[in-house]
Amino acid sequence: MINRRTFSKAVGLGTGAAAVSLPGVHTQASAAAVPHLTDSHPAQTVAPGGHTGFARMRHVKAGLLDVSYAEAGPAHGPVVLCLHGWPYDIHSFVDVAPLLAARGYRVIVPQLRGHGGTRFLSRRTPRTAEQSAVALDVIALMDALKIEKAVLAGFDWGSRTAGIIAALWPERVKALVSTGGYLITNVKAQLEPAAAAVEHNWWYQWYFATERGKKAMENEEERIALCRYVWTLVSPTWHFDDATFERTAQAFLNPDYAAVVLYNYRWRIGLIEGDPRYDRYEKPLAARPPIHVPTVTLDAALDPFTPGDGGASYRDRFTGPYEHRTLTGIGHNLPQEAPTAFARAVVDADRL
Image (tube, rainbow, N blue to C red; front, side, top):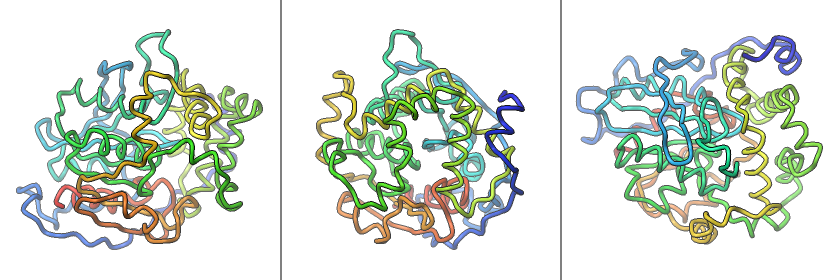
């Protein structure tokens, strides 16, 4: 557990929990829906913060990792993999998972490398975090669990990871829900400056490029404080309480957390070279490959990283059946702030 002195300093004054009102999202009827449940099923809606944890936590050796993951729903239901971002963990889907489980889905929510109970199997494995490395972790997890095909749904790192799998291994993806649209990274393009307002939003990326930022991430107390501050900036109307943050902050105590996070952000802006073993994947990703699988993209209107163009800037990257939705009043941690809307997007993507 996080010790009380460290946690109190990190979170500062507590805020009262408040439910975020959910925008209406159109749901289409389809024969692809789980047959024994209807759109009026009482478990279809839930207020944010209705759940505090997962009933089932499991581990499996997959690729380079011993993966810690939550599971909900029937063992033989159609599979949905929910992938979290930074600085978050599986609790971003704590309200989404029971909604999907009630619809008959088998929901798998893994801790990404460097997070929570997920561990590298060998001390000798480099603690890298190229975008393709994280995607290969998820492919290895699917193989270990004998999941041939799944709906992939995520935000932040999770959206990027899901999009990479959909682009490079489309046979493994039944449908995609991508918060923030098309997030596959072209490192060379990242070397060019962006507008001042965009650069301002990425302040922590530049901070992590410095020795001061590295020291902050390697100090547990400073790391937790930084992550909580990011939550407040990118989700300005999400009034989470201290207990909500502490549940996720446990994942930041992973011994490889700092190394993985620092590597990802430094690699992404070209400050360090990637591991050559991933070059065969990064080369096609740099060309911004199109995604052909059925997709629903979600934009959170209050997320500072959301472009104000209704998804137009990335629409051409999705060539299959497609829907786009913008959620008003919602910030970066979309599945935890608006779990009903996120779960509905999963069901609708599966029907496209």
